[in-house]
Length: 63
Length: 149
Image (cartoon, rainbow over all chains, first blue to last red; front, side):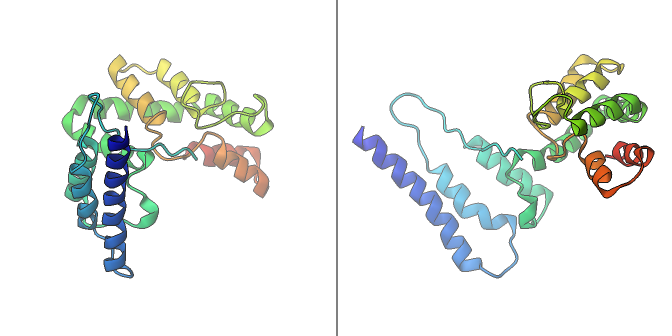
């Protein structure tokens, strides 16, 4: 179980860092879609472990 | 992962940048774009959508009633963006209009999905009407503006 938690934290932090680093680097400049590439790359490194879980990403916004 | 990659590739193919308020990773901002892609993929669906838009124009009485009921609290506390077809929700009104519209069932399902789970903007039935009422315009004018939604 410890392994799973570590994996979850590592992957979440990698995605977070990708975003934060990009924002740091590009603050005050125009946002372009390509700026999200770092996050996409981090997400693509995520792997399911143990039970064959599929990564669900997305969220619902209800106003 | 497929979802993230699809978002990235599709957004990149559509535009170079977005304004922060466009919030492109939220469903109801994606739905209009998806509908446009569907129009390109299937001419017949586009035709059906045009018929549906005309049907909205003809549903003045239904939309008027829905708006008045919502403004007056006829249904009690309701959620206009409720995806289940509860009375008073936008999906409910859309569904009623679709029931009387002569287009293929699959197209009706796609339109309903776009206005329920897909949301297709966060506009809820009766909103323009309620705002006009508070501003003090006449009932007729309120309905007229409402129908433009």
